[in-house]
Length: 549
Image (cartoon, rainbow, N blue to C red; front, side):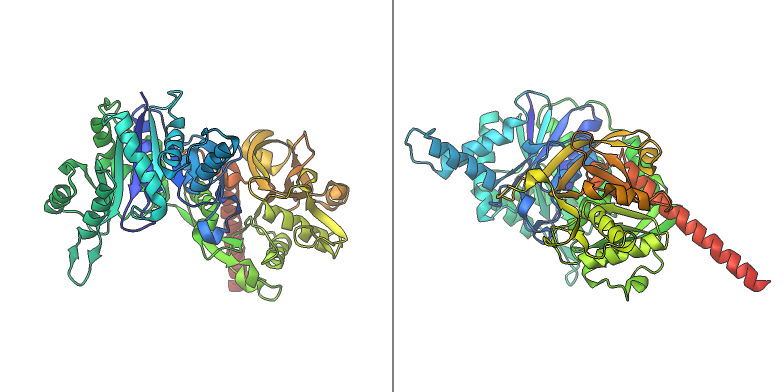
């Protein structure tokens, strides 16, 4: 029977439930078990697809086209396996399903209530991934914090499921905080006690406590937490602040989180986790041989989670290149032709990020022109690719009014326009071109060299596309559509062969980068930045030598 592990959080948000869940799954995977992780979010949005990144960070897209919580990105990056629509459920989706059933008459005239109808649907979704016994473990992360009003139906559903499944088939891991009071020079357990008490009042006693802390938990403190929170002493897990999220699996292995879970679920321990590739990655990450600076041009740079997958992909690519990638956030709204040199000074490469809407667009175009003319390695993603085409049309083709119809519906040169199948759509949620689509690359392209093949599949999230009416003009002027979807003719990748490294993709390669399989385009981009830095250093040395002579 599939075993179920529920990960809840208390005291405060942003403690890292997703990282703990992913780390536990990684350890179980390393012991030879199959595991998947799902996220239940308590907000009423059907999915995060229409949420502003400032509200909830980036919207992560799965292979099957689901717009999901960014934690699913962590799950995939840690486990190196795909998630799906079933791995992310929101309160909005639960209520929508139940209300639709009520309208169909499925409840035979009965009063529809939170209990049992909403909780039954939550339970059905929680066990859905375990129905076909494809996974030994299904780990469910509950969003929000215990005590939140919107979390109550989920807590009740977990209480019922624990009873339904039995104590050897379902456990609860509760992530909490042990704050350190500097004035008293003391770790405090009371917030954790209150958090566990809240859970107990709702009928759940956590089986394991994972305690986030700045300072080590000494033995007597662990004993106190165990005694007053009604868990076994070995079930109090220390989770110290880490230098990188990728060290957390090793820290949890040291604390035997996986062993405790397996023992409580009556499962054999299996093979001892080795995680050799993981340790090799961490070693390269911690001890780089060089350092580069990449400018990230975006409109949501104040919130790091808005570009989470891009930042993680750069970390993966940096490690494989044995190079520390320092990201310099540059807000596109404040970029102008007058200050672009100052803002991009001493940058080894530039990545122009995805986004929506008109704000900050001209700044992105100014940055792209600067890197194109100055031969600085460039990587544009989605909107970054579209603005690269607009910049080229304006400044190389001489189409001064060139734009995207997203920003200017009346432009006389719509080099970027809405996809035909999008024009009649009214509802915004879940209606973009989403998920994995095939692409064929030119065999002589930079992209094909990076991938090591010409046939690829990548994930999308967009409504607008390159207008193929301008293909011939672009090709003649030196910007080449090196990647296309053969069924639709959609341009997927643009390159400028005369430039040292200039790649712009309509798709989102960052979604498929993992620790064990860094995305090839990011790997090549970081290598190009390293090479550009080396050329710059050699040129500087030559100039200094000439001046000396």
